[in-house]
Length: 196
Image 1 (cartoon, one colour):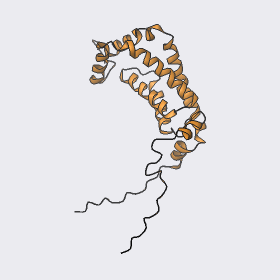
Image 2 (cartoon, helix red, strand yellow):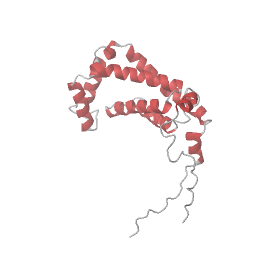
Image 3 (cartoon, helix red, strand yellow):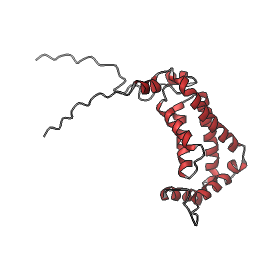
Image 4 (cartoon, helix red, strand yellow):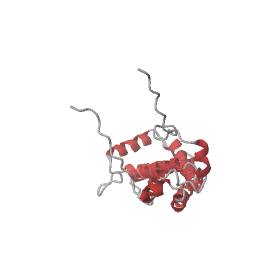
């Protein structure tokens, strides 16, 4: 039995995908969706930051959670997955809205600022997508599906989506934790032959 793996074929992505995800000029294409998603988060967070129902006790979040976990007498409940309902019910039981409300408000606001500035675009888009996912899991459609889809695109295009923004300076300055990984390392010269 042969346990040696066969070499894998080198499959490259289409040129348009490579351009969208790696060419700095694509940053101009990502600018409008990035600004729209950023503005949406900024507005949502700004509204919550100035609302005592979110910032002082989290009553607005508690009301949202209670509405989401409610099971109507007829029709379908807002939450389709029981495990997510149990998760929200545990947050309600712990009275987590008191500290979670301000986290949601500040999270939305800061994600908006980061996306508008084009600073750490991939991370900001990931945080926004995670919030969108949670809102959708709780049964809120609204603009969440569209924001989620665009955020996934921004995550995939993290190298260039913030190029027309702060990432143009931040990413080269900070670098990436995987910079010296095998695929990025320069080729090594072969080891010298040993006599014998």
